[in-house]
Amino acid sequence: MKMSNRFNIVLLLTAIGLTAMYQSVSAHTRLKTPVISENNATHGSDYNAVVVAHGCIDAATNAATIDTLGTVVVFPDGKDSTITVNGQPYSGTLADYVTNWGSPVTKVQDKSIFPYEDYIKDSLGNKLGFWTGGGKGLKAGFRAVVPIATAGVIINPESCAKSVQFVVSIADICQITDAAGFSDQSVMLWTPTVGSIYQFEGAHTTDSPATLTVNRSITPLPASCGAGEEVVVKPSANQLNRDMRIIYEGQQIWPKQ
Ligand SMILES: [Cu+2]
Image (cartoon, rainbow, N blue to C red; front, side, top):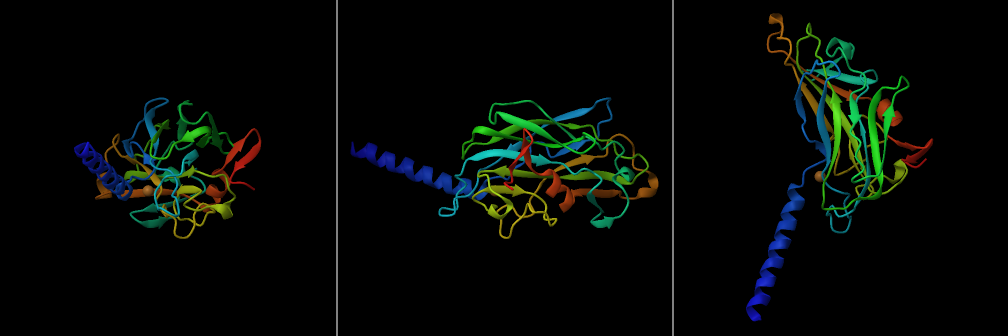
């Protein structure tokens, strides 16, 4: 009896130790496969997933123990976007580097975690992102793998791009609030700091968006390009403020208005 009590205490201490370690190394919400190759197949697509890594953070314990109610994922539209080339601002258009950017993402229908889902589209009907949510949601301590397909990306053969990285904005929502109510307790905002309403001072997630990097793989880098260019495409504040929301049956659900 005494022995088994001691054994239980050892197990308990081990569990506490593991929990503490888990918190310090817990991964962020990201794409499952963040680096892919070009794909010029007709209707080409690459299967991928958004991995919701952890819930929101209890203020008292600083542990990610708050369940997630839904997630919103937005890709840059390529028009209202900021482009950098080797870290320097670029004033040209995305078409200089990518010839077929339009509808970057398709949601793979899956109601296993969140029973509701719909696209976020631009005025032309391009699918720039999606939201999924509702039901019992994602229990804290578990991960969600939300399946998607990204459209084949073709790098402009004449360009010097050796890779093009798209910054993907994700909100893992734990509590439905208005923008003033955003906190580590209500939402994990995996967004770039671009001046949108989807950022706040001191967030666990500050300037830590997901990314999708497409490596040049179809046409060779023109000889005149030297080492080539690394292109990064970020959404503007304007695009996030417009597109990053949940509209269900004509009503905006999140953020609350
Ligand atoms: Cu984290």
